[in-house]
Amino acid sequence: MTALKIENLCKSFGNKQIIKNMSFSVEAGEVYGFLGPNGSGKTTTIKMILGLLSIDSGRVEIGGFDRKKHFEKAMSMVGGVVENPDTYGYLSARKNLEVYSRARGKVDPERINEVLRLVGLENRAGDKVKRYSLGMKQRLGLAQAIVHRPKVLVLDEPTNGLDPAGIRELRDLLKYLAHEEGLAVLVSSHLLSEMQLMCDRVCIV
Image (cartoon, rainbow, N blue to C red; front, side):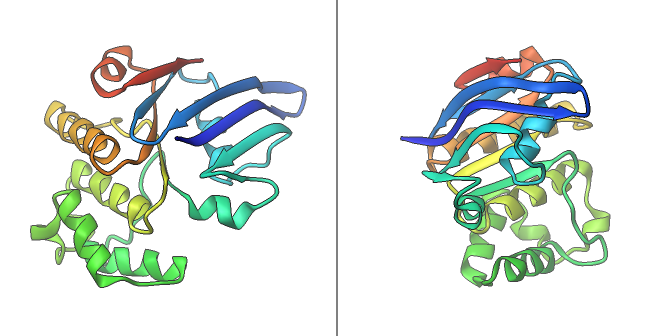
């Protein structure tokens, strides 16, 4: 089943066209790599998917909903992290997830426990996030992105700054979320070697 569909997407800033007629699709249950050098438009595309930038022309469909025509429905189907996860350092991981869930309209304690287990933070859920390592903060960002049970997970350069062990943990977690939980995972990177280890398919820009 196609969870994310991009058709003829275009975006310009002033006279400079950043994205021109981009098309691809991501299926439920796969990790899809979005590979390209820095400056190739990966983050711009991801921000359009997540509703953070307007679309000049073309179409983004998430979970069967057109992003322009059914914005709220489409956004309810997607979770994402662009660059670094936004968290409150003075709060615990659990409190961060409660705040994020409340902003989404509903706090489900069982779901919060479930995502903390999924990302391996259940034993540190009560610790303040400012004490977390970068890898733990990335995992908390993932937990925030999936706590509302989206169909699509979008991550922009999630391995940046991680050590080899952190990269391996993240890679295994994304594969689990796709292959076992059925999520459609779109992950961007400029590292071909990492995409080869992580992804089922790759789009090169």
